[in-house]
Structure formats: structure tokens, C-alpha cells
Image (tube, rainbow, N blue to C red; front, side):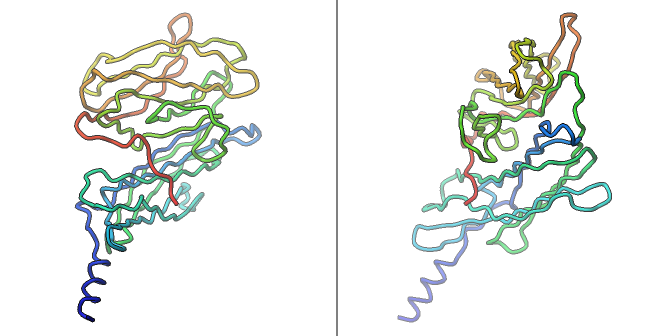
Length: 290
């Protein structure tokens, strides 16, 4: 009988090992600081750990759990930390780890930073697989926008932004935003949705924005459309866009949002990369940490 209990305990504790090291996707969006007395920006950090890269440990019959420890840091030029936080992310419990699609899990943080040059560093560690971690770094530049027409960073979405009174890190400008981690659009995701904010536009002023989507290897736009945006009184003007890429091939693309004046002079131009995959399905969104 003791032997049976020992076997059951070993089976319950045995992990289902991931084939790859843990992965970490970092998406960063910079928005204008509403406190005009302070030069800087509101930075949204969106960290995503794909479920396929984690080890699932059997907790009970037909119950498998994974967990990742994620450390996020923003380092100043002098090496000091402007921000540091460690969180534990746990994807939903699975009853069958043989399924190919395991949901990613995400964490979002909103931070106010003064102007300057920083380094964003992220580290992910698989809690159920010793020695498995991954560290990524990327530069982060904070520059206050002047008084001319300007656009925030572009946030890629998995679904259209929806009006919501929700007050959380996953909402902005009165809209609930479901981000696309790493700018990845899988099979079944045939439209690119995005959100941005237009600054220094007068109330009722109309600006013509041009949305362009181009395959990185091409010299011509695959998609292009012009959309009029009217300024709102007393608040930032949201830019809610979408493009139908259902007929486009797989590959790496660049989404560009630009504004031009009556003489066709470019007033601003913002770019963000995205990847279209027509083979693998991708979740419409991600699961918030519990």
C-alpha cells in the first residue's frame, strides 16, 4: 500500500517539461503626462509570457499548473533603478497538457518617468524548471512632446477598443484595450486594430490621418487608407483604427500612422512592427495574472 501511495505522489509531482526556455514579450507604449508641470511621459509596460514555453506540473489527476516569475526593471543612465518589480504569473490550470494551444498570461504596469534615456530589462524564470530563465533588454527614450501636433506610441490590439468605465491598467482613455502581445496576429486574426492618442489638436479641428501597412520586404504599401480625426475639447483625442489584412500573405509588416498638412507635408509619422502568421492560431487576448 505504501508503494502505491509513493507512486501516486511521484505521478502527481512529475512536471510536463516545456520544449523551449521560458519566453518573455515586452511591449512598451509612451503617452503624454497630464501633469504639464513635469516633463516626462506615462509609460505602459506590457509583459507577456507564452504558455507554450512554461513547464506544467501535475498537481492532481487532470490538473496541471504552470508558473513564471517575472522581474521588470527600468534602469537610468547612471545605473540606478527608476522602477523594479517582481510578479508571479500563472496561466489557467489545464486538464490535458497535450493540447497545442496554451494561453499566454500578461501583466501591465503604468509608470510616470521624467525625460531621459533608460534601459528596460525583463527577466522570466520558470518556477517548475530549475535553471530555466531568460533576460531581455531594450532602450527606452522619454522625450516630452512640444506644442505641435503629436501622436503617442501605437498600441496594437487583438480586438476593437470598446467603451468602458473600468478603471484599471488594462483600460485607457475610457476604452478597454486587449493588446496583441509582441504584435503577433495568428490565423483567424484578419484585422489589425490599434489605439493611439493625438495631442495638441484644437477642439473640432479636423486632421487627416493616413494609415499604411507595408510588408518589410516591399517598397509599396499593401494597405493604405485616410481617416479624418476631429479634436475633442478638454481631453486627449483617441485614435481608433483598423485595417483588413485578410488577403495579405504572412510575414513581417510595419504599420505607419502619419498626418499631413494641406501641402502634403508630413507633420508626424509613427511606426510599429507586427507579424502576420497564417498557419498557427493565436489567442484573441491574454489572461490577466491572478
